Length: 337
Image 1 (cartoon, rainbow, N blue to C red):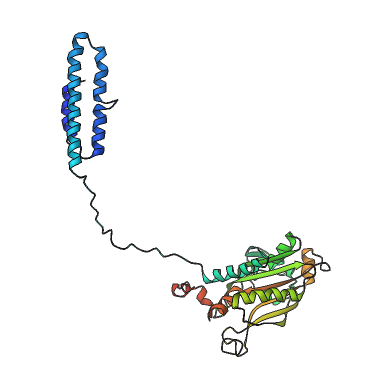
Image 2: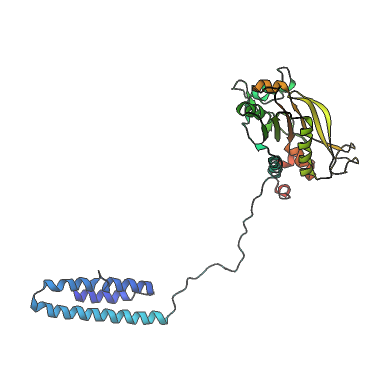
């Protein structure tokens, strides 16, 4: 190795050392275990006796020179502060706030309803939105001639025989009673579809919660007690509840359930049509024919079922007068919840 060439290389390299990190790399290059001085030292044993002394002196002089250069540069770097990176922005300026999202009001009400029944021992079960005609109608004792089975009242799938978009969440009642044995206590949330003209109180897609309980010796009074707990939990302890006789193919006896108007406290106003009552859901004891369809002995078991529209509950709870507001995605509306 040419020692004179190394001296020239050292002079060039040291000019580019402007930081402690760069100085350490310089030191390792020349004075490290695998550096230039170490390589020169390893050559000495291969030289003749006459050459060793002279060559060894040159290596020691190089080593001393390097130590001197490193020391001087280190002193210089300790005196001069390291160059700071220039920041082109004002770090004191406020940042751009990231807005947190929140649950849709329908999701909030749906979760609240399920949580209330869950505390009473009901399990939450979901089902498919594309259903068979049997589960949506026949298994629920809805006869072939019933108006709801007409094509203008149900979204049938054109290319698939006997398949449709479910018109209520009750088909899960049929599925669950076929798959599980009593006792059963289940609520079923989900989207449903009906070809209704969209207006302030109707939508072709909306949400329902179906609930049912099956066991021995279940009576109508059990239904009334469960729904009473639910209504007071959602609308307040001061509301009153009443049952009006009605007809549903899948329950017998059947009833529509009203609560006292939460606006006028039952005195009569424009919201309740001067009646003092607001309808919230339909209910009844499960029809024996439904039990026969799913293979449950109606002589041994009885049960009740109920169903409600989530939009209806949300509109009453928050005083909303148009169902379309839920689906227009207007943040001015949604941020209120």
